[in-house]
Length: 184
Image (cartoon, rainbow, N blue to C red; front, side, top):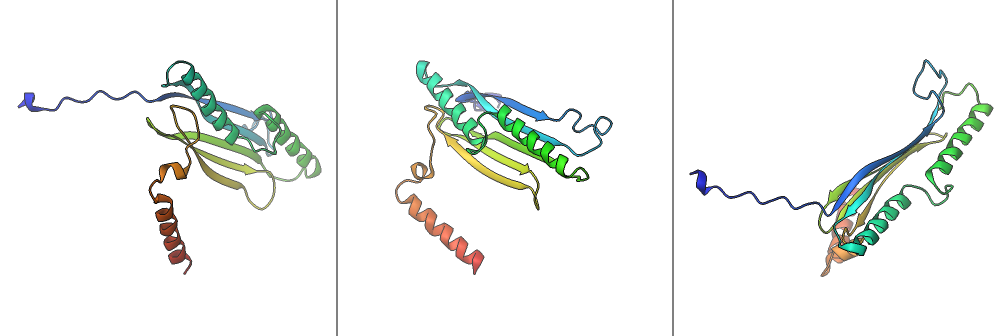
């Protein structure tokens, strides 16, 4: 009976190797009430960096560079100063200016952006980007988006390239049906 078992197939290596990177800045003592009793400001970015791509030779380096650039570009708004260090410095300066004007306020400023790989396949690397920010106002702002990349080339994969043969029209019709049902 033991000879009748099917041999397990060797697992296919992932097309890319990812390592998590982090960038964080805050005022000294933030998060430790014994060092800093008043509210605080934190700036944290986390993302997967492609450290190896499965493509051959020079193509691997190009694909890796494209994927990393695409991920990083989605982690920083266009209107922000270039680079995480510069943006963090601006957020902290804005907070300190606010605290100078309103010293009794209990408001905490924060910026958190996290990108994580949700699909790592031979034909698709899908990265979810979640951003949360509070810099005063009625409530924090939160967004979620996705970045889809071809691991072999590093190029973006858009919905139209996935939905072939009338797929976009069928998808639009299904979305319209759901929208109309939801909205009456």
